[in-house]
Image 1: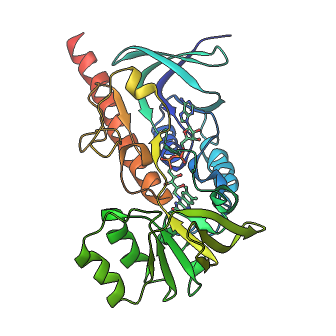
Image 2: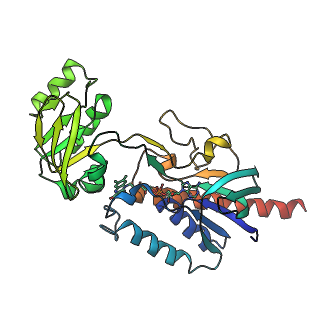
Image 3: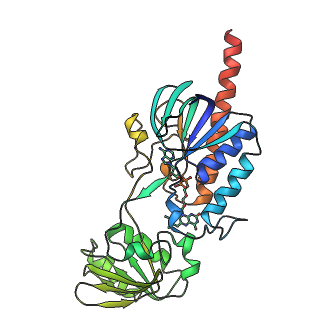
Amino acid sequence: MEKQYADVVIIGGGPAGLNAALVLARAKKRVVVIDEGRPRNAVTGAVHGFITRDGIPPGEFRRIAQEEILAYPSASFVADTVISIAGTNGQFELSTMEGQMISSQKILFAIGMKDQPLSISGLKEVYGKSAFVCPYCDGWELRDQPLVVISKGTVLMHFAPVISGWTSQLTVCTNGPDELTEAQRQEFQHNHIPLFNSPIRHIDSKDGIVQQVVLEDGTVIPARGIFFKPELVMGSDLPRTIGCEFTETGVLAVNESGQTNIPGIYSAGDAASMMHQAIASASAGSFVAAVMNNELNTEAWRRNINK
Ligand SMILES: Cc1cc2nc3c(=O)[nH]c(=O)nc-3n(C[C@H](O)[C@H](O)[C@H](O)COP(=O)(O)OP(=O)(O)OC[C@H]3O[C@@H](n4cnc5c(N)ncnc54)[C@H](O)[C@@H]3O)c2cc1C
């Protein structure tokens, strides 16, 4: 397979990587987007809250983006998984699962995050259809319905008040123990929100729509939707294998320009932020691409001075 040369390789073709590719292609940079096609929102039927694209299926979003990017001659896409990175700033060597070798001056990790397997019986069947993780993404579709929040502790104390803005018919299942103080429990009483600590036995659903949540103690909670927080891991193990640093919350540690602790390697999107939304990822991708382009141009400028 012929080796490819790039100014920037973008690993990941979600909103972050795609917007970065558009900015870099318009800056005349040779940009290669390598994407294995396993975005986190693949489970859902629509991207909401992205102006001009509200409700678009995720696959259609990516198709339009690719079409727009490929209008620029210096951009290309590779459907593959990057498995190794060697070298340093100015000359990184990447290899893929299919045996492709690519040499690149800089790298952008736009690898997103992935859900850990869901451990509650019946949750997989409704995830992305009537069980979601973010009310700003899917709260409108579940508004004024009986909803169950599955969460506990400090996350619950943030999550429940926010979601209560979309429905007055809210029930909390902590799946036990609740990890709350007595004062926090009373906050739920004051807001007339039932709180159950019994472990969840099963979520009953029909065609992906939640019908009821059944607890181990026999309690049955009728519901039409669920909000929960899945455990997340980095979209790829690559950053760890090459020595990137992480924050306490498990995302990539980057400076205000999106650069990781390794010179020449940047990150944008879910992988480097706690704000997990498509438009926020696209915005970060756009910003970091401009930073990378400025750096490439400045480096070329300085090389000419030092000749
Ligand atoms: C159920 C659900 C519903 C959501 N709904 C909405 C919504 O309505 N509106 C909204 O704004 N946001 C929504 N989100 C959040 C949104 O999907 C993410 O914020 C967004 O996709 C993050 O974009 P990203 O580019 O950072 O990562 P991703 O979109 O996850 O893309 C990362 C890509 O990198 C690829 N990749 C990873 N490692 C490698 C590798 N080594 N080699 C090659 N490719 C690799 C992955 O396969 C993936 O395709 C939702 C999320 C979930 C889970």
